[in-house]
Image (cartoon, rainbow, N blue to C red; front, side, top):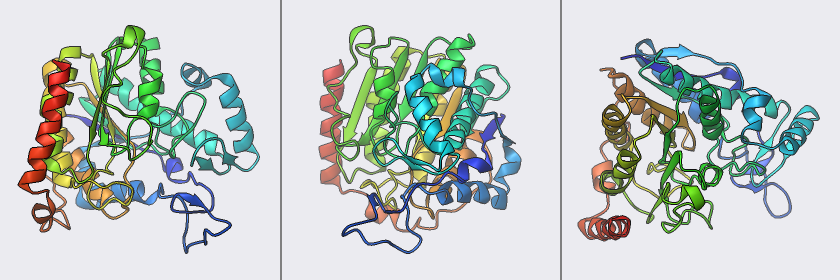
Length: 367
């Protein structure tokens, strides 16, 4: 099995403004030492470092990619957005949307991030790789065509999908987003499309606060090709695997895509400062096995993962390592440094019964 790992040092150089967590410094918001947005390069850089230190990198096909072209970008983003983004990028940086600041060269770094996602998808669709992981940064799943949002400047996955469609590499695409935050950008871009299924498993009303409802199923030709699975804060591994088994995976199986793309955020982990879930690296490994088995069943194993959120600089690398080891079939392990506490921290039986009921209600509504 050949598993690609797409990365570029330039993506680690993307920077935002002077923030204290999610708040711009100023007024009553005091600067913090080494302050900045929670979306930093370190969780991604440390993942790359960890796979090299353990030797897992030798079981992967590490490669870079070209940035996406203007033609690629224009399939998703209008020219007026690209023009303003490039103008600010060339003149020192700025901010175009909600919590999406960028410094000099931000446009090129975002194009590089999307280029990694595109290259990963193309390599799998062309049969050069069995599956692939794109270490994209900045992330993309919150970005709307004209409005960057939530650390996301270009819609990485949507850009890759449209490029693959234009190249004639595939016709039907499924996107499963397990980032703790709702994948509102990917949803919005394909909301009226019948050829792209979008599924998002997320913490209910975390971010964005006004999207991600179960009732939002698509419109027009896209009616029924969007599925939101909002879960209550405090959900752990059992609830996530149950939601996968009874909601997400059946929807993808019924859609029968040519390729399965995962918006792979690690912020549903219990260590994450921007989520309130109780998953851990074993949870992400188990979900990876689920989607690998499904991809083998419905689309000849074609599976691509694109990095999204995850804000624990310490723990994200271990979650990513588990996913990459599972993707590649490698025997190289990085033991969970907090492994002795996860069983204790998982929700109790009453909570699990509650979430089973929620999932049952959603499954019944889809039947």
